[in-house]
Image (cartoon, rainbow, N blue to C red; front, side, top):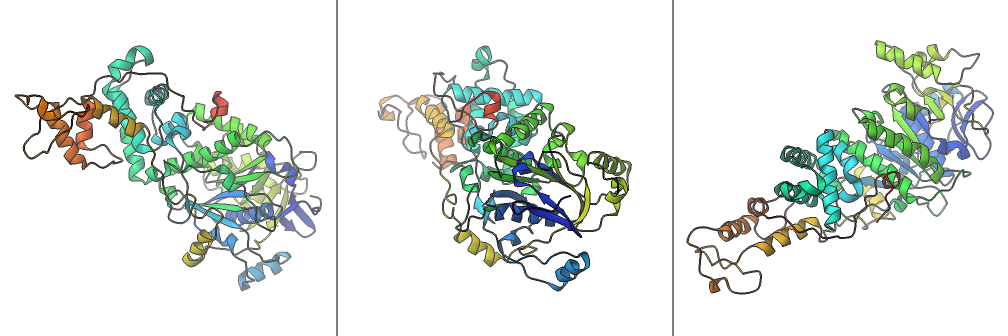
Length: 519
């Protein structure tokens, strides 16, 4: 591989052989693979630094919690110095890089939120692990909300909408088709599971403005956006859905720019196998389409995974820049992975790629980047350049300082709960309640038209008004994420809701692919 130019990003080196990534080819996407402990994280950090230096913002998920060191200046530790000398590498010019920390749970970084409507039924079905029938019912729930002009912003909105559709399924059958109570129940159970994993914190407002990822500092260096994903990995479907949503947001938000001299942003998708595990064919097709088209928006996508077989062939074919760390051929599947990796990299007459993959040391890799004509370069065996920033995590005090001095400090911390589907459905139910007399110990119930309940004779037997009053007491007059017992009684007895044409709620996720427009 030819020596790097001033504009290229040096990633690996072996003697006089320099493996450099050309910025104008960086949006052709890439793949970083290798077994656990072979050096993928260091490669990821080195590449992120290279992009930041030339003014390209970066997003990456910190799965193991040790990428935050990129925000601090590195030091020449004895172990690092020894490795540099043994491998004949140049000691890096130690420096920190501008960093913004994010966290879905709002604990280790700025909160990241999306509305239910923006996420859409396709990705929600994936997150909730719904089958085809259940996913179809969820599509109907979204369609009915659209037709009724109801905003689906957070989880309680979707819960209320599902409950309302289930209670009035017979009223919707003619216009929308059959709505199975079992499918509604499966959706509600899935929502409860996501809620138990803390996923409800992801839904709501203010929603992430993708432009906040695409910042540079005063020196022109690209912002390195790091998502704390160590806790998020306990909910792998939420993790994969969240990253895919962000990728699709980039796709829809950014204009067509064609081929640039450098990407507008680079997106690293760590633990990429979680995205494709058990994914339905329709979702894989959408991912393939987004990856193929997002290049024209100036975005480079780099998948990071342990095994190249984790990536479907249709997606793998679009990843031109490759860094292959060591693989272990302990099982037949491992052997197949080694063979597959060797066959998909450009041959080098002086290198047995198949054998080298199993012999690579930690921090050593087989590298093949696209050349100036867009062709894969001859595969070289080289050592990844050490990062200029700190290797390893930062301290809690350093994290707190980063967050307080961030460009988005205070923007996302406070959640906004505006009126949406939950409030609208609850209000309509209350408006339909008949006027009832006061009951001993329950207080006075005000009739919807403002008349005193005492104007009408009390019913001889307990009627809906009594149950409604009990429900109101159980609910405590406050708004909750889960429907209270009283609300369940109200919703279960509700008659069909008259539907009138309202403005459509356009969901952002993959909307361009489905032919939709943004809100």
